[in-house]
Structure formats: structure tokens, C-alpha cells
Length: 123
Image (tube, rainbow, N blue to C red; front, side, top):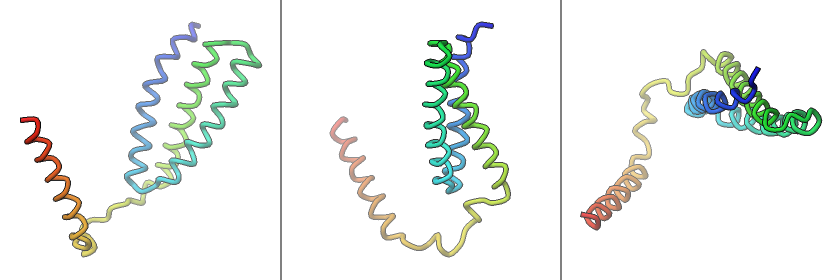
């Protein structure tokens, strides 16, 4: 089996991990995504030690460690999504939507002025 072909699966797994982590972040589960990410960084270091140093596989070990990290991260995030599938972060329009309009308008107007000044400078 040509293990170096597994290197090409790492960007695909990164894509899926990114989609699931962005979904959880939008649902306001930011701490959970960070906990999984930090845990996987620690496990990635251990897998690199195991597959590169103790089992001298070199580049094959690096690609396997990277792929293993992405796959386990994706599995953990999908398990968390499945456990929290009944909860949603946004429950529709409420009167709280109309609060703090002043701050939003200040931020939006300053951004719009900045955009028009830059447009005028380049045109």
C-alpha cells in the first residue's frame, strides 16, 4: 500500500473539520471547539513521536499522524454535533433584536464612511 497517497486526504479532512467547527462556532459552542482542538494538538504531538521517532516511518509517519489527527477531530466534532442536535443557538426574532441599535449604527456608519473614502481615493 502506498501510504504517501494519504497525504492528499489531509486537505480534504481539513475541509470537513473546518465546516463542522464553523457550524459549532455559529451555534455558540466555541469553548467545545477549542477543547477538541487543543486536545488534538496534544495527541498530534504524541502521534508524531510514535510514528516518526519510535516507529521510524519518516514522511509516511508524518502524513499518517496528520491524517489521524484530522479524522479523530472530525469524529469528535460530529459526535458533539449529534449530541447537541436538538439545541439551536438562534430561536427566531425576539424583542432583544431591537436593542443596542445605536452601537450597531455607529459601527456601521463609520465602516461605510471608511469604505466611501477608500473608494474615492482609488477612483
